[in-house]
Image (cartoon, rainbow, N blue to C red; front, side, top):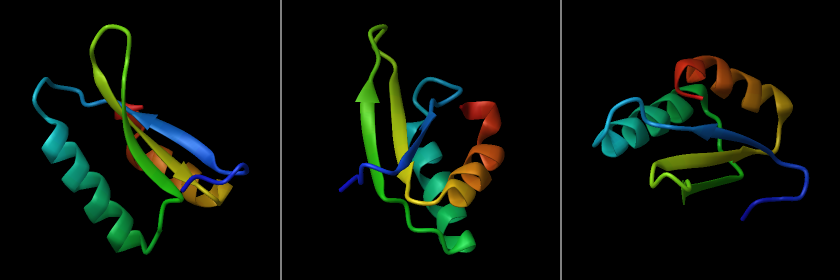
Length: 73
């Protein structure tokens, strides 16, 4: 569940059909960094694209995640 104070980073797959690969990459990265997101949910945009909203309780964790996935944000 997402807290009121969480920071949300939106990540969009670069290629069609790459949702599974992106989810795996994010989960692997989070595990290696020992970061537990406050929330993780898919969202559909108006154009039909699917993105992931990843919430963090720590600004430092959110910044690290955004830096790692910046080309995708």
